[in-house]
Amino acid sequence: MKPRISDLQSARYFMFAILGLLIIVLVSRFLFQKKPEVSALECGLTVYSYTSMVAGWGPGPELAKMFHEKTKCSLKWVDAGGAVEMINRVTLEKDGTPADVLMGIDDYTISRVEALPVRQHLLDLSEFDERVLASDQLDAFYPFDWAPLTFIRKTENTTGKQLIHDYDSWKSFLEQTPRIALIDPRSSSAGFQFIAWLTAGVADKQLSLDTFRFVKSSAAGVFPSWSDAYAAFTSGQAEAVFTYTTSAAYHRFAEGNLNYELARFKTGHPYQVEYAAIVSHTKNFANAQRFLALIGSVEGQKVISLKNYMLPARTEVTDLAWKPYEDFQLQSVNSLLKPKEINELWIKSY
Image (cartoon, rainbow, N blue to C red):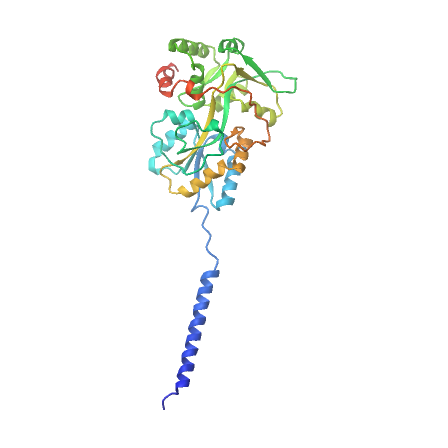
């Protein structure tokens, strides 16, 4: 006996209903199932920087926490030494380097190294202080802090205010403070900038060299890095050290110690800008960009200024927890000897 048409139609409707229900169940599971989270290690970032940046008391740990909150990715800090050491390391590692970002390269290191293993970033710098925008390589180097440089020495201070001593010349300063902790320009950008400052504006190069030899002859020693020289100064091995004006701010606001005097020269002071850069071999460019954006944000700038005691690169970051000393005349970078000249004339003298 043949089935009735109505029975066939009912069977078809039933099959279509089952099929439709099955499709709904499968689509629902696809749409509402919990997506697997990306492992923090799978999208992690490795940043090379210097000791005071990556140390527990520095800005590194807090920046890593902020980065994880924004991206759900881990951030690994590597203490790669100063700017010169950092560049040398990543250059030797070539395309096998684990570094995604270099943080702490200064303007003089940029100008000294011919081929830097970095790539262009795509970030806007329109809200940044004009003093950090002097480099002609801002397409690759992203400024994040800066500070003027001078000499600092210990003294008794009962005034309750920061002591700043004005000097007409180098000679008058050296007569009062002969035992300086010098920083080796071959291994430290701060030492390199000291040489540039010492010889700035002197037309007679031999006279400049004689001045440097005089400074060196009475120095407390030549140290491989700024941190080594500063440690020698604070331990009493030297009477003065070439450092950032913000070093005095650190002693005052972090330690409550006003017994540090800044030297202020009428001829002006050099200043150092620090940059971050994305390594050309990174496989994580997007997150490297996000990290640069973080350290250039208002929140990131506040963390760096507070923990690193440097001035913010971004103009609207003004409500710092410590007061910077802003009445130092700055010396144009263009007025200083070029790195090539310094390499030829001064490095050999060490």
